[in-house]
Image (cartoon, rainbow over all chains, first blue to last red; front, side, top):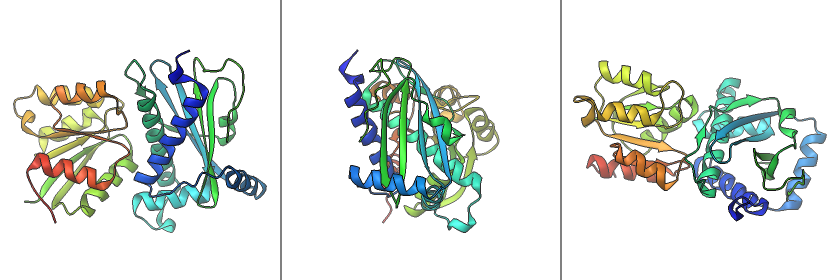
Length: 171
Length: 128
């Protein structure tokens, strides 16, 4: 397996892609403190905070998909900033469109950085059941980011994962 | 001069973002037109004149590559500057789209300044 697709390399690429997209397009500074991420993750889940998720499939060498999952309140705040609108004015579909585009940009940025030998193609991203993003089979990389008092979890699956086992490499 | 700009992207959110960025950058925009894919964009171009086009690549029905190919092969449409706005930052893709006639290539994510600079340079205008 090429070093470019090793799990540590993929996790680094994932982190860089998310950080760059959030900072440039959403003006969100990601502070990478693993302890903070774990703390916010616990709080969000324990509060029973509603979540939303988006998934985008990609085709190339390799093919796979990327998903992101986050709390609805922070998704709404992100969408409002992106669109330049006030949160109360946003409909659910507006928030979903922004989160889908976030998944699209993260995936595209990630794939560009790992330099696939074949031009990749992205499917139209889709909003999915957040629970469906917890599938670990074929998972190549996962990372949780603390943002705006909540968390954003991004997962990457590939048809030929760098690790044959279901080992999770997280921060 | 007030520009008529066509934004081609299957993401309504991205079309809204690009509109907002262009307005905030100071461009004098007379009107934004929008299309969700290359096929619709061609239909728009056949009935409306625009000063420039911003297009994504990955779109249903007709992707940005085929759209650019059709524009470049049309005697009337080929004079309209087309900029690609895409997440694909690979050298092969950028080279491919520029070879097809794209006037510029803007990689997502981008800061507003990058977009404005590319458009200004290609259109030969300056804004304060």
